[in-house]
Image 1: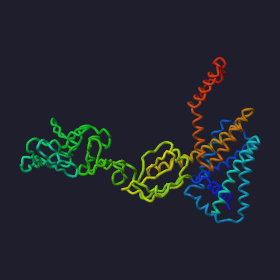
Image 2: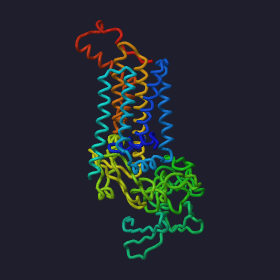
Image 3: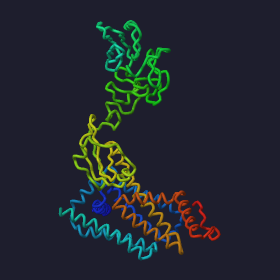
Image 4: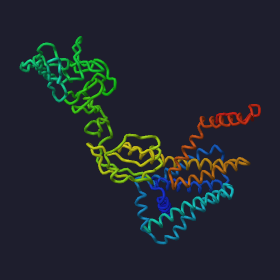
Length: 146
Length: 337
C-alpha cells in the first residue's frame, strides 16, 4: 500500500461528501498544504533563518507542490483508478483510517506548536477540522443507509 | 397589391422579393395589362434584352420594397447605402462591418440572401442571419452550424450537452426541456453559478431546429441559454479552483509572516494565520467560501477600498467633533508600498 495514495483516497472520499464539484482539486491542495506544514516544520526546527523576503519563495514552493501533485494524481485522470483501487481494498481499514487522521492532526498541531501559535488558536483550528471530518463521516454513514 | 385611383397593380416577385413583373388592371373594364417585366443577373443588374417597361417605370425592382431605383444615379437605393448592381458591390462601406470587405454585399451569395437595409444579410424566409463572406474566411456561425431563435444566434448546434455543477437546485425534467424561456441573464445569476447553486443538468440534445434552454431556479427567475451555460459552468469551476489555490497561498504567506515577526505584532499576525487556516480548511470542503475569501482579500487590498475606509474614519471623527487638530498625524491615508 502506498500511504500517499491512500491519504489522497481518504481525503477525497471525505471531501466528496460536501464538495462534489472540484473534490480532486481540493484534495491535492489539502495534501499540498499538509506537505508544506511538514516541510516548514522541518525548516523551522533546523534553525534555518527565514526573513519576510522569503515569503515569495514559499509561495512558489506551495505552487510547485500543487503542480507535482497535479501531475501525480490529476494528469490523465490517474486518480480515478486510484480511488477504485482503494475502494475495493478494505483490509485493516480502521487502522489505516486512524493512521490518516493521526497524520493530519499531528502534522497540523506540531506545525502550530513549532510556529509558536497560542494554544487557543490551535484548539479552534483543530476543532474546525474535526467538525468538517465528523460532518463528512456522518454524511457518508447516512448515504450508506439510504 | 397596389391601388392607385381606379387602377390595381399586382407585382409578381421571386423567392428573394425581386419584382419580376407588374400587372395592372383598371376598373373601366379593360383587360389586365403588363406594365413592366424584368429579369435580373444574380447581383441585381437588369438583363439588357429581357426588360420591358410600358409607360413610367415601376418604383421597386431588385429586392422589391427594400430598394427603390435612384432616379439620378440609376442605382438601387437601400435605406443605408447605394448598391451598384453592375459590379455587385456597395458604393459605401458596411456600417456593421459584417464581412471581410466592407463593400461586399449579400454575403456574395445573392441567390440565397437579401439585404433589407444595406447592412445585414437576411435569408429568403426573412430571418436575419450572419452570412458567409464568400471567401471562405468566415468563422462565425451560419445556418448550418448555429442555432437561431427568430434570427438571433443562440449557440452552436451540438449533438449533446452535459452540464455538471456543484450542489443546489436541480430543475425538473419538464422544465429542462421546456421551450419557454426568457433571455435575461444577470450578474447575480453568474455569481450563483460560480458559487455552485446548481447540481447537475443533462439535456439530451440541443437540436439545431429547436430552442432548448435550461431553467435555473434562482431568486430573480432568470434562465440561461444552453451554450452560455456551458461556458459559465467552466467559469464557476475555474473560479473555485483559483479560490482554493489562492487560500493555500494566502495561508503560506501568513505562515511566513508569523514566523518572521516578533513582539506585539506577532499576536496580530497569529490571529490572521488562525483565521486563514480555518478558512482554508472550510474552503476545501465548501469551495465557494474560497471564492468569497479570495474576492474579499483582493477587494480589501485595493487603494480604492483603503481610501474609502480612511474617508469613512475621517467623516466619523468630524461628526464626533474631533476636528483635524485632534486627528493623529499617522492616520493620514498613505498608499501601501
